[in-house]
Image (tube, rainbow, N blue to C red; front, side, top):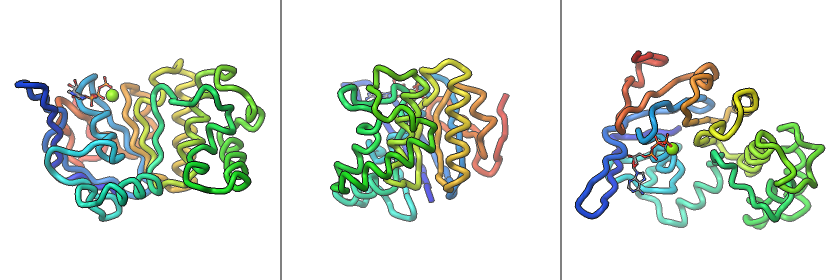
Length: 231
Ligand SMILES: Nc1ncnc2c1ncn2[C@@H]1O[C@H](COP(=O)(O)OP(=O)(O)OP(=O)(O)O)[C@@H](O)[C@H]1O
Ligand SMILES: [Mg+2]
């Protein structure tokens, strides 16, 4: 359902070129939990941003459900993002002026879903992430792990097929990080979400159907060598 075909991303900074990704060819199937590992600067966030349609590759093509992102119009791309992709960030990106429920339902309200329906779905999702008792809390009244659970509920509320998570545990202690990983894993198993998770955390590999190692913008292990550890 996600396919990257010889993808490169090169940033031009004046006369300097930064090769963030090169020759990346990958496939991820529906319901697969894929962990993207590698040192700082190896291209993890770049890859996630490209799959999420937040940035465009310099060369190569990315397909989601067979649709080539590079050939879509802006409108088609934002529609595809809105329907199929949910994103979870390291720093949660919650709006501080909205409470837990309002943060969760915001994507639906922006899509024109009725407030009643949005609030019903927010309740279901917040219950799923164990936060029914925090619906009216302000963001600053939450722990880091709770903030990330709200962010996960928000990422799931439009029922996407793909969850992109960029270091979702990077800002949490190890126990809370572990809980978030388990939550993402069980959610992906229940509903067949495809999860692509970038992390430095070795623990995340325990939950992975497949681990992809990136170094200097390249994939180290070939897709056919699932679970291959290069060290
Ligand atoms: N907008 C940009 N302009 C120039 N270079 C960039 C830009 N964004 C990223 N890079 C460079 O591209 C490379 C890959 O960056 P990326 O953010 O994808 O790494 P990462 O693996 O996510 O690192 P981290 O683990 O620290 O988050 C890095 O060398 C970075 O400096
Ligand atoms: Mg990053």
